[in-house]
Image 1 (cartoon, one colour):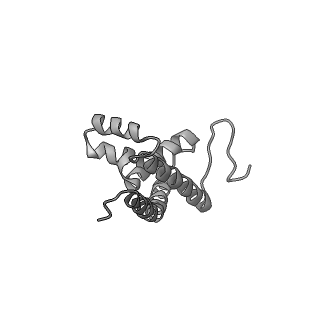
Image 2 (spheres, one colour):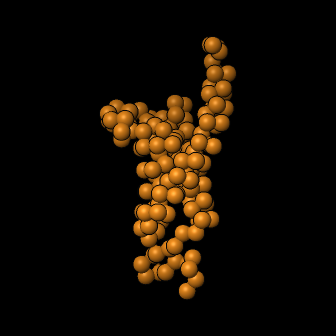
Image 3 (cartoon, rainbow, N blue to C red):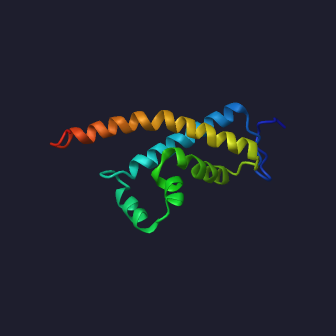
Length: 126
């Protein structure tokens, strides 16, 4: 059986470097989309208000929904479990780091564009 092929019985999969990069990329896109969908004026803004009222600890809120870099750890583990990848702490650590790196590349430019757009929609451009 091919080293990269998944076995049907126990759903094990060995991750190559390319697999890690692609998984990190996909995680980062999903995390960035979720983060911005929770912002004011976006589709999941009501959910964020509920979370803000219920989740009191920044230690929980940041990895759950408040910080894209922090979200890398929690959501990478979630996708790891959902995907059913064989537990390999070394590969998981790399996926988390790659996801955080992509989140840095994605989030700040997008946040700048969104912030400029929101400021242009108001009369107060200070």
